[in-house]
Image (cartoon, rainbow, N blue to C red; front, side, top):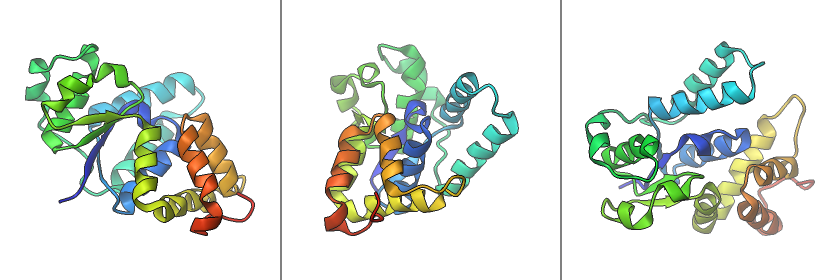
Length: 195
């Protein structure tokens, strides 16, 4: 049975972080899930903070994300929303989708919106993106390091080294994960020499 995680919109917002989370799923470490509503929220946030980005580019991002991870979209969760009690009612759809998907973890930057005691009754835990990635490093550091290297290799304009990707991950809040990957570079042998 796969380990199922639901990515919240705020976890999918930063570019390098989103890319890493998707690559972790593509490598089979987890089965990543999200909803159209989560993607709507992420796209709206990106449009607000980057008004110069055309809507077509945001639509393309959404399509690429959905195509990148098999069976990622959760549906049929709407009937659960009203019965859920969270500090921020706007996050009930996230928990409802996690319940419907059978997720064990919600990856979110808004941990205070997902009280551990309440989530426990559903067998779900909320984790920050940094804690989630650290868990994946603990499970398979070489695969996560390879994901970072893949991100660096995919960057062409301008080209980037893995160290630049790690710095971007740090800026997005993955401080401990980036440090762990930097510390394991020589041991894992996965990241380029100038990382």
